[in-house]
Structures are given as structure tokens and as C-alpha cells.
Length: 348
Ligand code: SF4
Image (cartoon, rainbow, N blue to C red; front, side, top):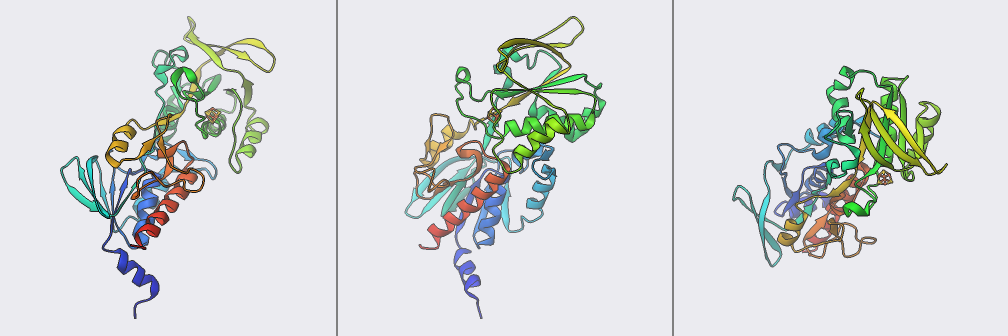
């Protein structure tokens, strides 16, 4: 005898769904759809699934390794067809189906698409005043994570002082990114604590406009950074970075709490590059007849009551395709988008 849930899965098994993007949102969406009984193809333009998590060491809260999150999804990916090094070239709508053509000229006919193409990291060389690419001591948040993953951080000479610049490429009209990237205050504080774990005598300084520690436990991390690790927080924007004759970084800022200009010598400066639109959004929006906002992220017709919906019936979004999100938020949205697909398709 077939149970109601098995019956539901049998009905779904002839319906194909495409998930576009193999980051954490894409992996979760594909897994949820597969569990609901759909045949799922996940298309990833990179060499392997995992997205930005492939380049990130540890996540907060929980101190969980990014690699364990990706491995968890991949070890449970049976039944999901994963195409890497693949993009979508076009899509043709007909009645209740979409036929997409991939970069390898394969035709895939699906009943719905979830776009989970995420974000790009802001290119820190655009902010020339911070000296990224000019001075060896200036790195980005992503570079620091790579040093943590590879262990090469331990090959570096112990720095006396390390600085973290918040809001690099975010909340900045000059680079046309007015939005807050949401997670980089937490990342800066997390990374400052990690630096202090490695080199307890190193002094750490966070230069912030205002701290946005929005998530559960984030405020605790902020207190821990001050009380346990002795991280210094300076409210002020860095205006200029140079290098002295000894190769030390010279950082000029204004302490906006004391209204005093500040000049500090550092060995390492970490730029918190923000989350910006994926450059593919415009082309994908034309292919799938969806909308994008002024910030270049995909736009939902009703971001409050239908955050995973699009202006096109069979197209859904999840994760940072619609704006900066934490990993946990992306996972939640992916589950929600899979359910939205199911609600649409199970009524047809
Ligand atoms: S989360 Fe913090 S560092 Fe990131 S853009 Fe917002 S205010 Fe700036």
C-alpha cells in the first residue's frame, strides 16, 4: 500500500526543477526539492559546488568549519544531478514548462527554477586609498580566511598590531553601494578574536562607522572580543593608508567619538570587503524575465510576504541573490523556496 507521502513523491517524480548556483542556498534548495520527490538538476558555473564557503574557514556561531557544511551537503546529494563548469545561455517558456539551454548546449526542460546565484565580494582595489594590491600588509577578509584554511597564517611573522576596516565597499555612495552587507561587522570581530587566539600579544583594532551585530549571539561575541581578547574598537573611517620607510603601514583615521584625527602604525590591515551583486544578475534577469533592483540584486515583487518569489511565475530566489544574507538565513530561504516550488507544482 502506498502511503500519502509516498503518493506525493510519486506525483512529483516526473517534474524537473532547476537550481541555479551551487552555494549553500543552492545545495539546500536542491536537497529539499529532492526530498519532496522532484528530479533536480543543479547548475554551478564554478569547478565545484560550495560557493564562497569553499574559501571560508570557520563560521560564527558555533565555530563550525565551512568545509564540514559543504561536505554534509555533498555526502547527501544522491539523486541530485550536479553540473559544474556550466552556465545557462537561454530559456524558453511554454505553458507550464521552461526549456533551458546550458553552455554545453544541453536542453533541460523543467517546471520551475530556483535562482541561488549569490553575491560577489567587493573588489577592494577600487578603494585605492586603502592600498590593497599596493602594500603586502593590506589584505581582505577573504584573504585572511584563505590564510586560516591553508595554515599559512602561522608562517607569517607575528604582527605587533593588526587593524580591521569595516564597510569596505558597503554603505559607500562613492562606489554606488549604499547597502549594508550585514555580516561583515560580525566577521571583523570574529577574525579579530581569531588573530588574538593565534598571537595573544598582538594588538587588534576595529575601525567601524557603527557596529551592526544583528544576530543571536553576535552581541556576546562583541563583548567577548573586548573583555576576553582586548580588541580595541575605534569609531571612525580610515581615510588613508601608506607605508613608512620600515615597511610598516601608516593608517590615518578620525576617531569620531573624540573628534580627533588618528595616526597609527600597523603590520597588517584587513579590509572587510562587502557583498555586492553577482555580475551575472543582469543577463540572468533577461533570460528568466525577472527584475533586478537599483542595487543590482534580484528584486522580489513583495520582499516581506513573499521573499523567495519573483515577477515570473515559475522562477524563485533563495540566499544572497536578493541581497546580503548570513549562511543560516540562506539555508532557511532555500527551504522556503523549495516549499514555494512545491506549493505551485503540487497544485498543477
Ligand atoms: S555589517 Fe558592519 S561592516 Fe558590514 S557593511 Fe554593515 S556596518 Fe559595515
